[in-house]
Image (cartoon, rainbow, N blue to C red; front, top):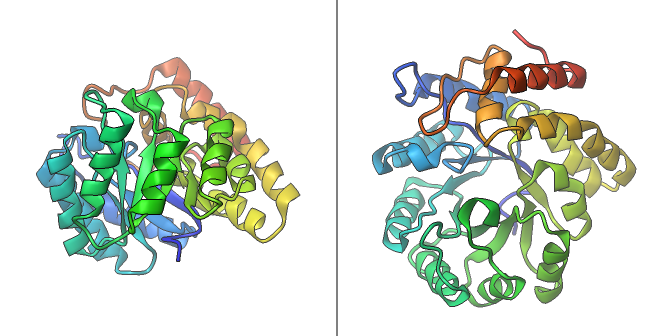
Length: 296
């Protein structure tokens, strides 16, 4: 059984002006996401600024989210690291805290060969009972998983059930589905490729767009899965200018700016991420207005 089908929000981590995690605001946006029809919460991923959270902050944000969501929708905990031992420790803690699944990014900087990736993911998954999703995003990590590596892990490690695919390479994704005979939970990691990946047998998206348009993103997937393919496609295409604006600078710079423009007061970013350049922010605000989002 899939962890979720639909749109899981890659949720931002709100900050106070002193750069501490703002748990009151996180509670507020979790409730907004659930009310908006989001199908899962993905906490402490790239969009959640996991790279600049301490391990203690990282785990506290995961525990807080699990407690507040309280089984209403699945919570997927981002517990990946370029240190296998660290990823194991965080994954075990997330499992014990009640996460529904873990999301494991490929090791970055020190990378590893394909054999190294197999050993890394196998070791982490073997230490937990809950399902694990791999996260393939070579543009961020500097290392990509081959379709053969993804297929091997899904076929040979019991609780590795799927992949968040953000390679941007549809031919690569098609090969993954071919090698797995479709027996893999495939999620788009790119908001501009939701429908293309659904067409190859995907079951959802882990989405940045959902932070500002949860119901809309949910509907893109739901309509496709219900057979309303043309309407889903049209919704995907209509959202492209906004999606482009949300990635006009390094994620999550634009999406945090967008939420602040909407009056959600999610606070600043931690360095080395900086506030959005004014020209880009103005273009983002214009696309948000065109899309129909209300600005403060």
